[in-house]
Length: 316
Length: 274
Image (cartoon, each protein chain N blue to C red):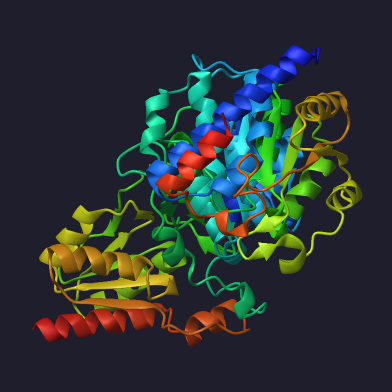
């Protein structure tokens, strides 16, 4: 169990979770592409050097090697920054890992724009979209350290490929140790029937804050953490669409093809209702401090509350 | 392993059966890649009918040697040796590339027993072979991994990433083979993107490289033996081959890279492979 601190980055929790997993299961192997200190796989490397492979700066080769290890019975966790994991090696993930349905978990850190000063080349705002479209791929975006630890364990027990999206910055704890993550299930963090906010990852905390803001306006927002983006919890989305005035989605990702896209697809097919997507609006990022960037691109509690409030007023 | 004249003759006869299978399968499918399938037939026959430890009755036997066809478009050659080894009925060969049949245009491990790894997108096989070789080492298993690549295929950058991985980890349980037929879809490899001395490149990457005539069964067997005996580094066999080997009108014809024979061409080809 993680030591309960006020905040921890999900990548940190991932590194610790790998060590726990490695102790329990000798078939766990970990690969990295020269970023072990940043992705925190170094924790596993220090504990289990024989089962850790630093592939150097070679993401495509790393995915293939992970596939080979999995084909020979291992559970392979392959880690690097989200942009390189999914972009550089997309076709290797598609053909060598997903088409073959092999037991490779791609754990991608530094997702989103809050990577900050490194600028757009390192900011991954397309990864959910391009992973989501591949058959057999599962996608989990944990919201805090507790959920990350749970998700790592759950994915290790679920055969086949998965994508675990992790952030660079420390985020507050939302869950205590009693929380149990279930693949394909959303977690309702706050009940409400005026409007629903469906968020994932770093945007779950702002979503909760937005609900507080809305509450002052006498709008009760349901807040849903949709950490399992694929498979997605269709029931929770349909219920939100039918029982409230509409849905605001919030993610540190492009509004195209990510959580917002996935929710809109379900709503469009099953329970038409307004869906307003908060995310990066089809532009590239730029350098800046994490907080400044979140503000600049409108990834804030204030923007979520504004969108929710608009949905409610249109309905009334 | 004794390499006597009878063994050589036997393997040559089996390679001829593989070539006949290739021609017939592709004619029935009316699409596919005859040139490269024919050029690697001797190599694959040697592996499946003599060198590799494998058992069609136990396709999941954990100690089996593994073969990966990185140049997945030459699946017909693989399907032939798998069928002739008993992994599935030879009648399956008649349904190559047909809807709802297991023999896909490029190998699919989830559909075809005996296929160790799906392929078809060039450049990915060696990385996967490395992963299997590392797993064998972790599990203290003695099985070997063979991966067959095309010469044009090594234009893919991932191959060289993987070449470094294999030598870095001293994967001597791994043997790569290059089907060096000198042709790719758009023409001669030397004109499209020259490969220069293939074995020198691999040697500089820390590999043991062995140059052979890829149609001389004795040389093939000797090279595979040398690879197995080489310790401390991975081995690569650079097999000089002829695209379309065995069918005179297909030999060295770039047009037969990815065009199936017609019914009339099939008859002529089979007559040559009697």
